[in-house]
Length: 148
Length: 167
Image 1 (tube, rainbow over the protein chains, first blue to last red):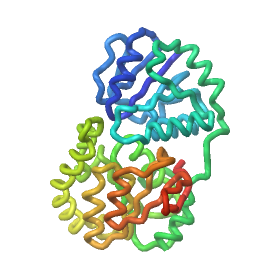
Image 2 (tube, chains in turn green, orange):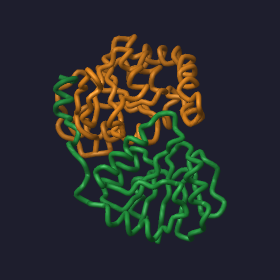
Image 3 (tube, one colour):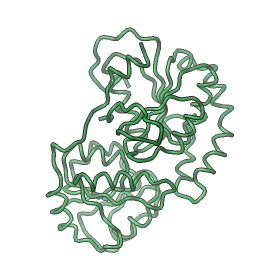
Image 4 (tube, each protein chain N blue to C red):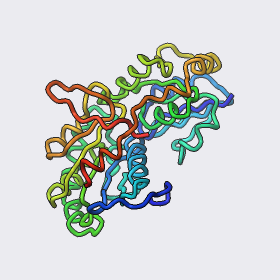
């Protein structure tokens, strides 16, 4: 099973170090500005990540808008870990939303170690290809309001 | 950006839209926004942290720290003169009728410069905001920007315009 853990472009040391406590040959950790993993495969940045998400059976992501968006659109299994080390609280807001709407499991790092196959099964049961939340951006209204 | 999507016949519009965004989720949403406008024939110029020196990558250094916002605020003050000169001299800015910012804090100097040279400024709050608005959004509002949200939000007496989600 191929699993991607991604922390985006910033730092999320707790997520990287927690997932790196257990070895899994299929796990790739994209660690951003955090220290590289010692036990599992790691990469600091993945260019054009959106185009590569389908290569993985499961994505474990920080609760950043970019990856969460992309996974919801694909209707593919993913889990989120909100980065509570950040100075603002927007990752909690998006995690609360996903939890409330039943769109993805939200992980607590205190529950580690994780059985990745169990996580995959839970995420697979949660994901819904038709669940991507609307409404979509009203470009016509935007153009009429600001560009006409 | 023009090659990202199939274009329709251009709509008659008053100039280009300049779009400012940092990195990560900010840039992802800005790219979707640009692709959507271009699909409707609107000319767009996108500035992101990864590609433009006008948006310093200080957020990468400072955003996780205890004093992150304050470090960013001090740093963007020093960046402002360069942004002002650029916005006065760049043909891309002169042609712009609208500047749209997606944050983060590093977009503030260019946003402020564009305000000072008479461009209309709009801030689009992140899709990840459901209950509160960001410090960057509050700063843009101080600059006189109109602000739009992607999720329906009630912020006390404010009920900002919700345009729906970019995607």
